[in-house]
Image (tube, rainbow, N blue to C red; front, side):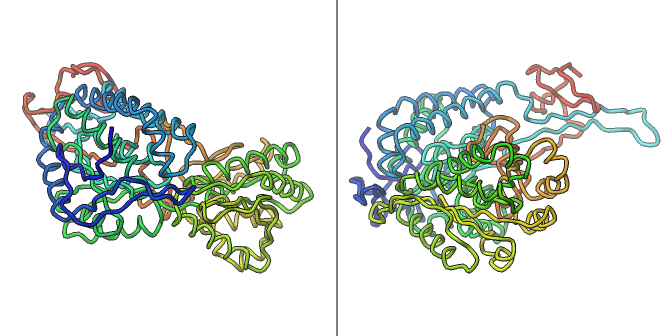
Length: 530
């Protein structure tokens, strides 16, 4: 498949604008061949008008049709094979195993949603049967279920060019719900986006879906993104990226004449608490796992462990020493693009200037800035210095982390209370540790979306019970997840039907439970007919 660099507006290629840009190989700085066309306001408008036109027939499609569509897209993306892996590697610096793994995650996720659609209970069908003889007033027939909201705009993440991009969870869950999608391709990997976007359109054609179910536009700056958010046909926005970018989109979505939800997953410091019993029992292995987690994907994971808290002791000193030794063995590696590398380097330099914060360990080899390389850094400080430098509570996106030596369990709890919302928190402790620090754990429950015990925050299992979210600023709405099957609920809303004739009701709410889904009937969960 040869790249053309054009916008995908429904089934048509479009390149109305004169402005173009190229992606770059972060390892070499090389400008890649294909020129990509910035979308014009007219192209954005057409994409969303097509999505609006496609919404009614698409939402009326059967769950089996949408399930087949997702599986067909998965097959098409898999069939891209080496071309996709090579392109993603060239645009992001990811090695082939990472690109292969991302592809597997994306296609398996799509198939998981296909299974969800076929099973069907996710629609949360609720039926309260009438009681015409009830006094003093008769009870009406009341039924409700989730229905799709309309066209969704998706912004792909820079750090996952396949798994959280054109065919990531945002797109898949919106399509599963019955919502057309317009994707803003990430300007750091537009070639990867084009390959996957064209595979998605090929699948839509094979499944006979209406034009406008999917479109994709390019744009380097803010203009295209803001035009997508502000378009009157847009009903929701999904974003993964920086706090600054996510907050700008959220503010724009709220400022519209008719505000819409913006589900943004943003910054997160992902604290780790290493308790005394665990340190004494297995401090070395915990330090090794911590450094592995810190450097996974060159530290460019939203669940990267940025702060570690422990009680000052000989065991914590040994932990820092072991972590520092492991950090020294980490070879510098290229980050996703020059902008992320510059931001990381700036953040590390700021930490190095802070009084009371010491560099405990770092990669032995110096990074090459011409290749956007990042070295691993482990800093250490004490509780007094952390109180003096609250900026240490902020995320530095990359393989840098700070260990904080606290004086008492009360200080651990104090710092836990000071934490802003985070995607994760991790606690390493024995059974005795966890019992002794019950208050700390309860505080962390209020601060994060996922609490990890005796493990590490990086690496997310894509499954129905996963919650990848958290209080602000980790996300703009802590109730929702961007990974796992629950993320479909961002793009639906409950619709209630009162005293509706059977033939007017959706199939899932009729007396005969033809789909055999779980339904709440008169407050009892059942698969029986009414």
